[in-house]
Image (cartoon, rainbow, N blue to C red; front, side, top):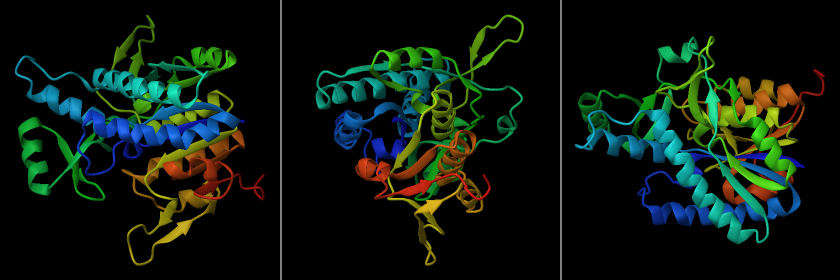
Length: 307
């Protein structure tokens, strides 16, 4: 079975952790352990988030006195693809002896007329107190919004239209190579309609929506979205909280899940299932094997009655 795995940024860097290299390496060791059993039985394409990492690079760039202007987000996204991809590739190489593994920096086409350009919505970087967030917003010209545990920077996030290196991923899979790609949703670019020239864009593409598009284009059987909670919850962190263990795309769309956290994950799972008739699931990193085998997480399946 071909599985596209989308690792959440919070699975790689837990909320509140220091963004040290050693901390990231320890978390990626957990990733390798969680995915090794799946990789022995199935064909894996691995994508990952980069919210904490790209936020760190953006902050460092903004305060670097050697720069006349901060590095744009698309270049920081490319850097995080390489960094996280290298950590994943090396660790998986040790966990899966003899397996061919390749990290591919990929580019994601976005539309310049996407309505998302009118409103920042994607969280990046670390969590701040309200006062610190407001101070940084004034000083750096950032937009901020309240996350589940504090305040964070929000940036523009248009929808992914096409992953430009999909054919290359196909070729690598055909040569029995495990591929790590589309990190952070891919490097966002626009394409000139006359010349075909590509231009990087100061945005971040949602990695779950990109993973769903990638899974569709690769004709994957299963989209597995891994995060830091065991499953999808209705009324999360309220007295009415209830786990959602089995759902159709229509069920998820009625759930009203928050745009900045679970919303993109449920939308990505719904899109993949609707467009392909395959299965998707959302759950915790450490339960990856159990999720695919139906023993954990939220399973998203086609609405058979509607079909």
